Length: 457
Ligand code: 4AD
Ligand code: MG
Image 1 (cartoon, protein in one colour):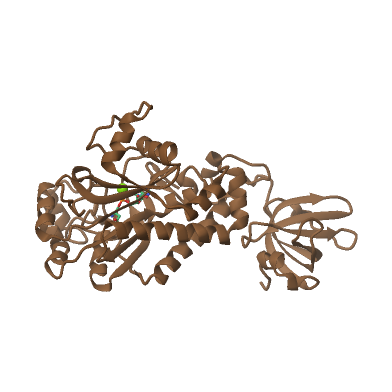
Image 2 (spheres, rainbow, N blue to C red):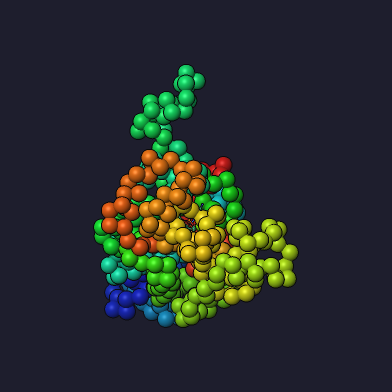
C-alpha cells in the first residue's frame, strides 16, 4: 500500500501543503457531530499524527474512531494547530481493520504487570514502543562503535559442548528422550545427536578468543542462555550478550573500551531518541536524562575489590549477606557501592580468584585475578570482563584446581601453545543496558518475549 511514514509527515517541513497518504493505528479519537480528531501511530515516531476529519465534507466510518483500529488516510499536510508539528486535513479515511471494544490496550494507563500477560499486544503502548525504539538505536550504535574501532563482528556458535563460565548453568540440547536402558550417562550421550553432551552457549567468549587471536579485535552480539534459577528483575534465561575480545590488551585497556563504548551508545540514544527520553524522564525515572548526561561527561570510578570489602564492612547498613574478603558481591552490595557511595558507574577490579572463572589472568599476589565488573546504580552488574590468562602453565593449573575436563578444552589450550599473547575482553548484558538507559525496572519489560524460570509465553 503506497503511503509515507508518519515520522516524515511530522518532521519534513517541505511536505506542508502537499497531499499524502498515511497508514496507522488509531490511538485516541475525539468525535463530535461536526469534526473528528484521530491520533494515528504507525510506529515510526513517538509523536502521533493528528488527522482532522471535517464530517460535513466526509462521511466517517464510526469503526475508524475505535482505539486500535487500523486505517489509511489521505489528505493535505498543514501546520499543527498547537505546537510546531504538522497535522493532516483528511480528504478520505478508510478502515483497514476494525478493533472491538475488548481491546486490552485502552487510552488509560495500565500496569506493567498486566501488560506482561499480553506480550503480543503490549508493544502498542507508548512505553513499550519507546523501549523498543531505544533498544534498536542502542544495538545499531554498538555495531557502529565497534566497526569504527576496527573490531570484526564474528558469529560464535550457540550450540556448544563447553560451559564457558563453568557454572553449570547450561540448557541441554538433545534429540533423544531418557531411556532407562542406558548403562551410563556417557553411553546415553554417545547415542545423542552430537555423540556427546551438548548445550546452549552461556557465552561466546571462548570462541571469541579464537577469533581475536587471528583478527586482533572482534566482538559478538547475540543471544546467550543461562538455566539460572534466579527469579529476579535482572535475570533472563535467554539474554543478549555483547562480547568484545581484544588481542594484546591488558585489563586497563579492556576497561577503557567498555567505558568508551557505553558513553558512545548513551550519547547515540540521547541524540536519536529525544521524544522517547523525554517520555522516560516523565514516566519511568525522574532525573534519567541528567544521569545519562553525567555518564557521558564524567569518568567511571575504579575500585579494588579489597577496598570494596572494607567500604562495605564500614557501611552503616545491615546487609542480608555478610561481607568478608573472598565473598562474591551480592546485588545489595553492588547497589550500595554505586547508589550510596559513588552515585555513578564503578569498575570493581581484582577479585579473589576462587569466585571467578578459570580463564582469568592470575595476578602476582597469588590470590586475585585481573577481572572487572562494571556496576551501575539501579541495576548492579551490567558488565563482567577480564584479562585472560595467557600463560599455558598457569591456565592449566587453574583448570586442574577446578577439576575441569582438560580434553574438552584442548583447542582453547592450543591458543596458549601457539603464539600466546596477552588479551582480554568483556561481556555486556544488553538487556540490562537497555534497562539502564530507559529507566525500566524489570528486565522482562525490555525484551519482546522474556524467558524466565517457569515462564515461556
Ligand atoms: O559476567 P558474565 O557471566 O561474564 C561472561 O559471560 C564472560 N564470558 C564475558 C566476557 O568476558 N566475554 O556475563 C556478562 C554479563 C553480565 O554482566 C550481565 O550483564 C549479563 O551478561 N548477564 C545476564 N543478563 C541477563 N540475564 C542473565 N541471566 C544474565 N547473566 C549474565
Ligand atoms: Mg558476572
